[in-house]
Image (cartoon, rainbow, N blue to C red; front, side, top):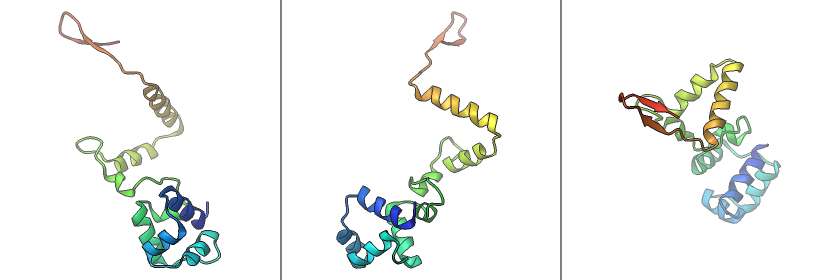
Length: 128
């Protein structure tokens, strides 16, 4: 997708008209229309404001990544010491076969399986 297509997609996903968005960012609706259609390119200040407002990266705006979640979610802690960004960096170092195993496991967990844990008479946990 182009910058303009991403811009239009974000605007529509947030139920904004070109007039409303233009007013929010201090530009005319016709200027915004030109950005969305790729007739003109906005300046960096506008691009930065839009990315910040919609909580996406500038890379997403230009189609360099499909990651459109708020960029600050990369700093969310998954455990006491690992953030989402740390986890992604670990995963990106995996070779293809390990990635396939990880994806299979994620699909397995996503299927709704929740292991039940029982305790044996000797006090040891047993997963079923």
